[in-house]
Image 1 (cartoon, one colour):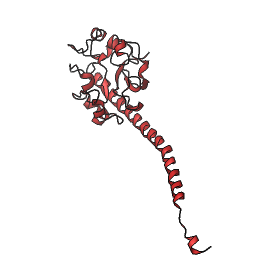
Image 2 (cartoon, helix red, strand yellow):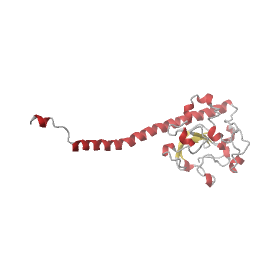
Image 3 (cartoon, helix red, strand yellow):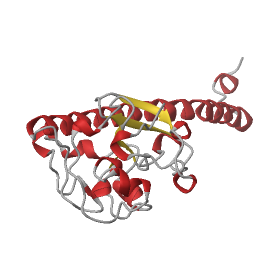
Image 4 (cartoon, one colour):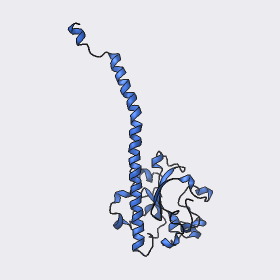
Length: 215
C-alpha cells in the first residue's frame, strides 16, 4: 500500500451516504423530542391551573365562601386583569400556559388576559344561563354552597387545545379544574348535553352552578 492510498479521504458518494443517514436519524428523533417537550409543557400547564384553582378556593375561604366577582360581563376572560386572587398565587406567570402564548389566545378571544377561563356559569344565575342572557346584569356573587356537585362542576378550564395541535378545535382535550380542587385532562366531547349551538362550550352548564359538566 503506497502513501497516496493510505491517505485517501471519503469519496463524495460516501459523504452523501453519511449525510443521508444523519438526516434520517434526525427525522426520526425530532418528533420524539417535540413530543417530550410538549409533554413537559402539558404537565407545567396542569400545574399552573392547579395553583390558580387553589388561589380561587383560598379566596373563597377568606371571603365567606364567595368566589371572585367584580360584576363584569367579561369576567370569564379578564379575571386576571382585576386579579382578586393575586395574594394567593404570587406569581403571575402561572396565568399563561407554556404551550399557548397570550397572543395566540387573544387571536380568537380578544379580551382574554389568561390562558385559563373562569366558567361564567359560576357568576350568572341559573335563569340567565338557561335563557342565554349571561351578558346582562346584575351578576351574582357565586358562593360555594350554590355548587351542587363540586367534583363535576368546572371552575376553570384551558382556553385552547394547545396540547392537541394549536388549532382551537372545539372537539379536543383540555385541562379542566373543578370546584372541589381536582384537575383533569378531559375530552371536551364528554361534556354533559347542553344547547346544540354551544354543545362543546364548557361555559354553558344547564342550571348554572347547580348543574353538572362531566357525568
